Image 1 (tube, helix red, strand yellow):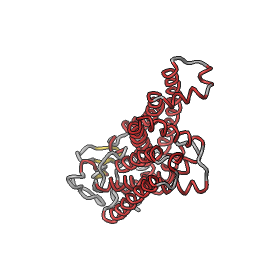
Image 2: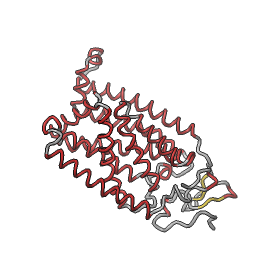
Image 3: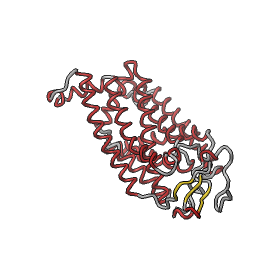
Image 4: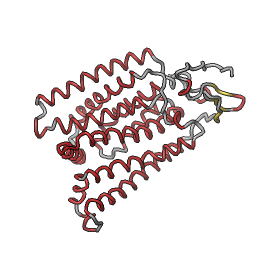
Amino acid sequence: MDLPEPYSPPSSTQAADSAFVGEDSANSGFADAEGRRFPLQTTPRSWTTGAVVGVSLASFLFTSFLMLVVALWLVHGEISLAILRDPNSFAAVSSSRLGLLIAVVIPQLALVMPSVLAAFLSPVPTRRRLGLVRGDWPIWTWFAAAAATPLVGMVSGVVVGMFLDESESLKEMSSIFRDHGQNGFLLPIALMIGITPAICEELLFRGYVQTRLVRSFGPLVGVVTASATFAAFHFDPVHVVAVFPLGLFLGWITWRTGSLFPAMLGHFVNNFISVLAVVLVSEAETGLLSLPSIAFSLAVFASGVVGLASISVASVLYRSPQSADSDSPKSGVQPS
C-alpha cells in the first residue's frame, strides 16, 4: 500500500512496534504493519480517560480496605471490632511479611486492571495503546533513563525536604522498610516495592492516561496532567510534592522514546534504590554525614549524571515518534 505523507515506511526492526504505519483516508481508518485496519479516532474522548482514572481509584481504595481486612484476619486469626479499632493490630500486619505482601501487591493490581481492560477493548492494539513497544530509541537509552531516575528522585527529595518536614506516613513507611530489611527480608521487599509500582502505576499513568492525553491535547498537557494524577495517587501531601518531578521525568522519557519500558525500568530502579537507602543508610544508625551515606549518595549522583548526559545525547540523535510523524496531522496534535 502506498503510504501518504507525512508517513515513511518503518524499518524492519520497528515495523512490529509501529502504531500506525499508514492512514487509509478512504476508509477513515489506520492500517498497522500487518495490514489490519482500525477506526480513526481523531480526538480520543477525554471523559473515557477520566472514567478509567476514577474507576481505578475506586478499585484501589476498595481493594486496599478489603485486603487490609484479609491481612488482619490472617495475622490475628480473627476479625472483630476490637481488632479494627486497635492501632497495634495494623502494626502487626505491616510487620508480617505475608500481611505486607497482601496489603501492597493486590491493591496495585486492582489499580491497573481498569486501564488494561480499557486498552484491551480499544480498537488500537493493546500493546500500542499502553506503550508496550520498543519505540524509536535504542535499548541502551532505557538503561540510561534507569540510571538517571534515582538522581531525579534524590534531588526532588532534597529540595522538598528543605521546605517541608517528613510526614508521619513517610516515617512509618521508612520504619516498615527498615524493620523488614534488617530482619532478612531486604531483597524481597526491595523487589516488591520496585517491581509492583513500576508495572502497575506506569501502565495506568504513563501507558494509558498519558498516551491518550498526549494524542488529545499535545505532549505538554498530556505529560503534566498524567504526572499530576500520578502524584495525587500517592495521597500523602509531602509525598505528592516529592514525586511530581519524578512523574514529569518519566512522562517525558515515555513521550520522547515512544515506549513505556524505559519509564518502567527507571521507576523500578528508583524504588529499589530508595528501599536500599532507607535500610542500609539509616540515619538512626550511621548519621547523614557518615561514610556509607556519602558513598551511597555519590554513587547515585555519578550514575545519574552519566544517565542524564546519555539521555541528552540520545534526545539529539533520535527523533520521538510521537513528536514527529506517528500521529497524523488530522488528529489535531501538532508536532513539537
